[in-house]
Image 1 (cartoon, rainbow, N blue to C red):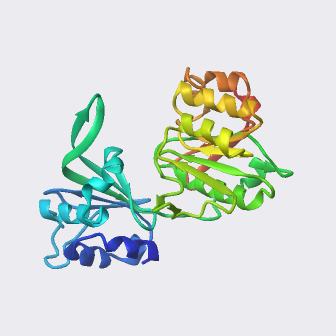
Image 2: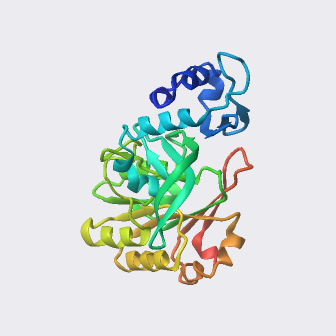
Length: 305
């Protein structure tokens, strides 16, 4: 079992901790999620399979009750639920090691926004898994002769785009001598900030802005951090596209991602059309979740209009 997973077990009730620790190392070392629902079997998800957790004491499916979810919440919030309310309103809490605990229950609205989540009945523990080196072979496509190329990663869900983007950030940050990398990590998925410290390795030249909208974060970084390159995940609104143009016009390079099956689908999106018409991206990387090598295709940006 890897050290990161060992640290996570400390947040689990003792009976659940023992049951998870008895799962084979082959499964634990590829574990991506632990999905915990009140009165339903705990599900373990790896990158290739779904398994039901067995209760170590009864050898039947492990079915947690309300008190066990409360115990996990008390541990991840250090028995101070309201101190973590801003995180909970966003639907997750980041814990030491970079793991993210997704939270689901009854939303309480406050002036049209989520003010709280109560009656929590579901937790999704997303295991932090760094995969250093996965961007090594494509780095020469993005960084040529010391200059970063504006790059777009197109990816369907569960194809590893955030993991790839994290390693690209690390690689460029450690390679770009004299450069400055600004990572706009709105949901905290890339750097996994805990107590102000990134739990993931994002490189020696990277500044992180987290917990604020990407569009605002990009503008703030341009004004205050003088970045060489801006990196952000999941471009998806006209306001964010406008911020990309502001960065480009300020001489800043962009590396970002979008959800999509392929380049044909992305070209049809009205919110992104101006980026292709103006040939903003010099490199397009397309991922495919069903392929063993998930880097499915690399294109020159001029091929998309």
